[in-house]
Each structure stands twice: as C-alpha cells, then as structure tokens.
Image (cartoon, rainbow, N blue to C red; front, side):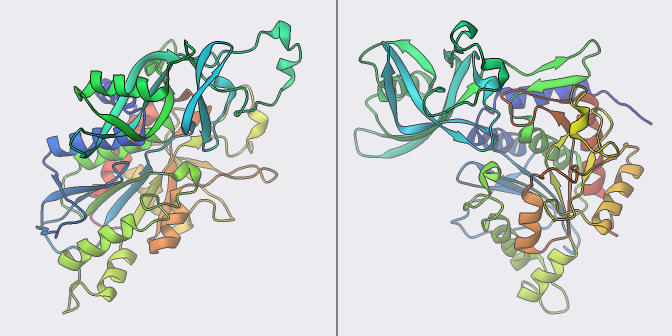
Length: 439
C-alpha cells in the first residue's frame, strides 16, 4: 500500500486553513486558486455563455462556491464533490458592545454545535465581512481579518469554583463574552472602523453592518514525533474543501466535474447558499440548458433529470476517528483509525446518503487509487449527526455517498486529523474525477 507523504500539499493546506478564518475568506481563497488555474468567474445575474472544455466558477453570498469543468465531448454525466465552508464558533451579536468591571467585552452567540470549553484562555482574533458607507453614500462590502490576539475568554480560577472539573455547564450568554481592553468608552464600531482603515485604507467611512466571528489565531501545525497529525481550527470542514479543490485542479479535465462548497451546514443548511437552498440546482440547470441533452431534447427538463441520474455526488465531511481515551464511544467494528484512509459513512436512518451502490463505487475508486478505505457507523445506542449528503440527494435527486477523513475533537476550537489521510482522500477524489464511467 502506497503511503505517499506530500509535504507540499500539507504546506498548501496549512496556508489555506490559516488564511481562511471565515466562510467568506475560504471562498475568496478558493476563488483565487481557481482563477490562477484558468477558471473563469461567472456572475449569477449575467447571461452565461459556456464553452465545452472550459472551466468556470460562481459564488453566492461570497461564502459558498461552485466550480466546474466541462468536457470537450458530450456532457453525459457529472462527477460532483460536495463540502461546506462554515465551522462552529462564536459570532458577534449586532449590538455587541458591553462592559463589565471596567472591561470592554463583546456579546456573542454560538454558531452551530460548538464544543465550548476549549474556547477559554485562547488567543482570539476577529474576522468576517463588514459593510461600510462612503461619504458619497456608496455602500461597500470588505473582508476583515484581525489576525492577532485581541481578545480572550478567561477561565474562572479553580479556587472560586471547586466543582469545575465535575462537569459544570457553560452559559454562553453570561460566561463567554470575550474581553478586549480596559475601557469605559470604547465601542465595537470605533474599533471596526479603525481596523477597516488599517487593512483597506478606507477613510471617512461609516460601519453600517457586519458579520464577524472570533477565532483562534494559533496557526495550523503538524504534530507528533513523526508529524503524522494535522492540528488546526476549522478542519471540519475546510479540510474537505481543500481536498476537493486539490482534486479538481489536478484532474485531467476529460470528464464533467463539479466542486460545490456550501455555507451554513453547521446550522441546518436552510439558506440561499446552503445545501438545502437552490444554489447547486440553479447551476446544474444553467449547465444543462447550454450543454446537456441529446436526441433533440437539449436543455429540457427531461435532459436535466437524465444528467443528474447519470451523475454521482461524493459528499465530503470528516468522520469521528477512534479516540484512544474514549474507545467505548465507538462500535468496536466501526472505529476509523487516523491515517487509515478515507471513511465511508453509513446510517440506516439516512443521516448519511450512502447506499450499497454508491459505496461499492467509491470502494472501487479507492482500490484503483491504491488507497485504504474504512467504514463508520455510530453505536446503535447513540445519535448520529448528518451532512450535506442527504440534503443534496433529497433536493436534486443525485446518487450520493458520504465519506470523509477521520478526525478527533470535532467542533472543538482546534481539531486533529491525519497527515496521510489528506493525501489518501485527495488521490481518491482525483481518480474519481478522472474516471470514465460511474458504474
């Protein structure tokens, strides 16, 4: 079994993770790499003129992105890879400025199913997008990334809470407001205006609105005596976005290929740019309208159904790796090992979209790519999370499989995955995009 350790790919991964503290930054960074590789940007409000053999991408809300490669030959099927750009965390409330004991703090709301305890005593930066009004009344949206330790959520000393190690519940409303500075007068609007001026050179602007979130400024790193682990914030699910992008950029371009990275998966996907929204369906309809169909039904509703049913979606979202300190949390026959290869995720209640048909095809792809493959199913006495897989499958009807690399500490402020697994799944995804048949 080949165990290629691709140092250059891991360097690119760590750079991507470090530069992508929010979905807007992740989307912008993916768009930059796509354009460098010759992908042409499309605007949803414009008419599309697609050409066989060309490569395109489109964004929605600046936080979700779809990139696609059209074949030179007839478009009969699409090989799709799906992921999501968002991660659990602490987002600012609209009126975030608050003070206590002489300290400026910012009120937060929890986004997604965040593991809260690891957020204490971390060096926190702040990032997102800000909308400003110029002196002439013009509105402009800019990205903001305060990539330095400007805040923290201090723990309460054990001397003042002797039972803290017995599992004290955390109240995000009263106990998790980060502190920024000793001040009785400073406001968030003043600080954001200052940061926008520093980063974009915009002067005489008024902050009108924002979507900002705290994040851990500790950079990604390779961990372990042999550096066999990747540790970083937002591995769930920027790691899948990265591997999907790497595969799309590396594929030979002979087949129709799509990479979709939705937003808002961690809160249910019910948005215009989420998997439950119409983003992917809109793009597929427009592709089919110009490129799909045969036997006189070019661009028809029937040809769209034919295209979708001839295609396959690999939904990539990380899986729970067997934890050495909590082995009992896994079914003993379904505990994926870190660096043991990609994981096929199965759930009888359809929390994952995998079935035997799609599972068999992916396992065959892994065999052809010389990549090990594992299986995951939750314990029968535990609940199961979900992914964009079932949402996409039920929304547009495409045959779908749920896979991912194994990781520890899912939804923590810092997560851990295997360095070899990055290479394993990327190789499998690349071969999938190059595969001539989906049978």
